[in-house]
Length: 141
Image (cartoon, rainbow, N blue to C red; front, side):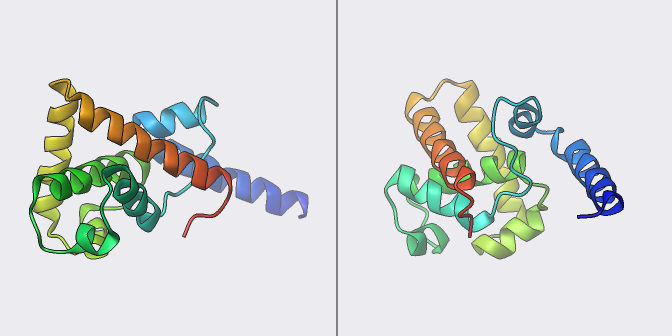
């Protein structure tokens, strides 16, 4: 790379970091506590939550509203909202949900964490760890 291209790319990365540091996850990444992930892939988030909640991706994307399915979706929404700049509309298209359903899920996930739901917090942490290990290997899909 030429010096000009490097300088231009650095400016782009700095602009992206300004947007991403609005979330606690990305702020930690910018401080070196986590590997810098410029963009989490929504499929990676969904798959990690599926593993943590022991469900299949078709169940995650399907219409069922069983408690364990819904909580996995809530966690995915929380991770995506704090780790990406994707809009609720984009998340909804990817996960076959309305944006208002995802907003509700985000608020429910925050509520569960604030109430100290240990099972939810542990599974959420497991999903985040899976995402972190996937993204550090450079195998996001």
